[in-house]
Length: 276
Ligand SMILES: Nc1ncnc2c1ncn2[C@@H]1O[C@H](COP(=O)(O)OP(=O)(O)OP(=O)(O)O)[C@@H](O)[C@H]1O
Image (cartoon, rainbow, N blue to C red):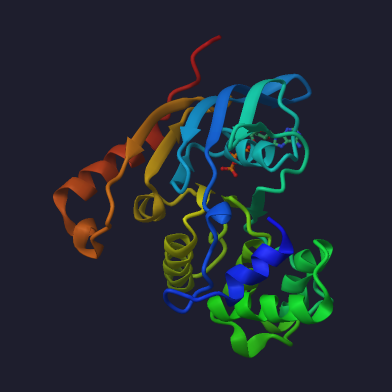
């Protein structure tokens, strides 16, 4: 998307307190077909998976099974051994402009203020100083950091730094946001706040989100689909579809508890991938 469209989307009429998002920005379809990823010729993941535009798909699986590797391949950071990954029908090769990654450890520039961190991708795409400043400050406002524009990352809490990272990722206007345990290092309350913030961002943008977590409740709160993966090399063992809207009381119901228990048991006894 051009920066002109971006600024239109920020300054146009908003439905709530969030910038209007153009159709172009809505989520992309992700298609993984017999995708084999690995290191030094040894497979770490062998997956086929379809993600509809605007879905939140959560990857759950035992430690080291290959979850991050799948996200890294979609971000263009890893070349597949075989198979294909496409985003809206286009094969992912190298750094795909439609996909942006959010890591657990914030990857902010420590010498740049919150505002300048978010301005960075905008300027990289050719926006001028004034335009990028206005856009970045709008994004930071949306993640609740309007009063912290001039703070360096060192002066922000872990949760606030993750908000800056989220704002910076949103400024890239990705069609697919790849989130690798983004809230794993946060305290419980901040994590809940970030989950709610993510849901509100997603409701407004309808981005496709692929999210890795070890937290089953986080998965059940966020996901349209929970994808259960086997031990390395990760293969898809099961895809669990979860209805929306989410009832906040649902977690106290028996059906929720049964599903949660089933997933916990799966993770405790996750199968090995079938021999090829
Ligand atoms: N750069 C690398 N070089 C070699 N092996 C790697 C590399 N990165 C990851 N691996 C290996 O690939 C496998 C999958 O790693 P990956 O980080 O994708 O797992 P994960 O499911 O995300 O793990 P966790 O849940 O513990 O974060 C692991 O066995 C890991 O040791």
